[in-house]
Image (cartoon, rainbow, N blue to C red; front, side, top):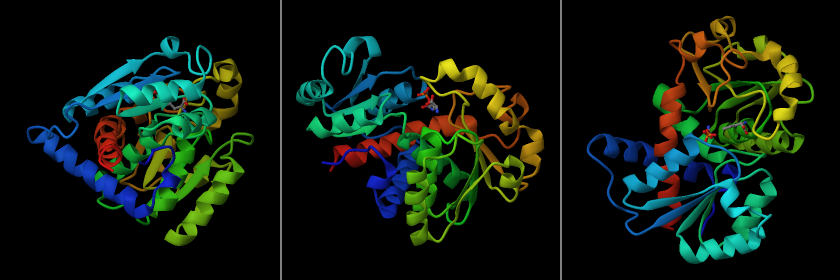
Length: 306
Ligand code: CP
Ligand code: NVA
């Protein structure tokens, strides 16, 4: 049995196979529907934070494949408050076929996995967001028909989304540059691990303070909110610190002509991204959001059939 907690738990070949499966499931869906591979199977979805994409895409992924999903709200389970995480995990294991959880502390998803006898999927923690990165790689693959040797520039916070993208790029052979203000870098351990992985794929992992220099030659520009869920108290300070890191038309013009602009959403329009860019010709934001559905179907198939 496998869990899906971090991209680093999977080999490059496994990640590529999942992306190929996602493309196939997307085509199948668009040509009439998926096969009921998950008939009788149920996914429990545990949320400690709000969600639109993660909740709906996992729910629909299960339904399209003939299964079902249960939404468990933050108030309902009280993960680690009403009941210990280990107990929640062991109880859920007796009822459902897989668990997807969105948590604050990464330790909590690790603990859920440790005590679970069914596969556990990380639907975002404060450390990473691997399902998002899989949908993003699928989107890039559709845009460029390859991943290898492309250049991604992430502008903004070295947060959960950036962590998974750095690993995805390192594993799949894309150059990754992050431009972030001082104090908001990717964790050093992540840089080190991504660099070690990059040695095998021959790409560069780079960090800079300069968003303008960072976008030169970029095939993909990626940004995310300046204030992640749980950091709301810091919103004002973050708006000031991140002001020079906005993805606007001036920044996009400095990249390659065919650059795609990505954002995991939800977007704070007028902050990390302008309306002109989010709705402009380079934006793939909504293709990216749709691809959560297809990428996660592939993840579910991998976990539920192994
Ligand atoms: N991108 C993403 O995970 O969106 P939600 O927070 O709406 O699930
Ligand atoms: N970094 C954001 C991503 C939301 C999908 C957050 O954690 O709130």
